[in-house]
Image (cartoon, rainbow, N blue to C red; front, side):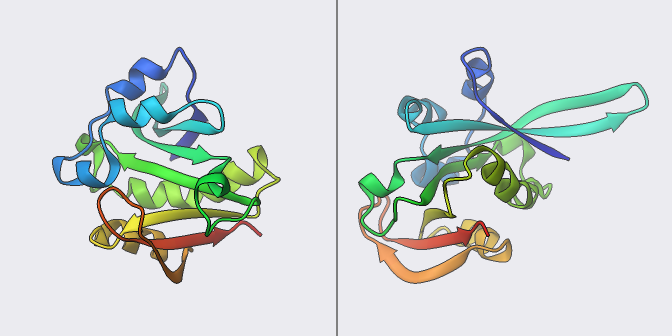
Length: 164
């Protein structure tokens, strides 16, 4: 089971220990770079994997993402009612276990409860990052069929997820 939680000053050091897979660095950046952008309208969120045992629940930090409440200020394709979804990663030590899919399934409810003023999630994904694009599309995101050309690693698909 996945639990999403806003990062706090006391959990920041845990986020700093997350590792990005080398082949994903050009798409996401390092944790140091990502965390440098957090704060204000950019909300850092931790991804916890919960495992139940007879004696209780064990939690391990397995991922991270940013929610950008001012996404439309930076991106002309976004509306004021769009919440940006950025810098999503699953720690290199925890990839391949279906955690990305689990996050995508938990994400809409997490956003609806905490940010009801937003109508949809919007993200950009590099045209060369096929695994990430496939994950988003398989989990309800819709391809706008437009490209964002301002990405640091090249052109990006613009995807959105209506929040209902």
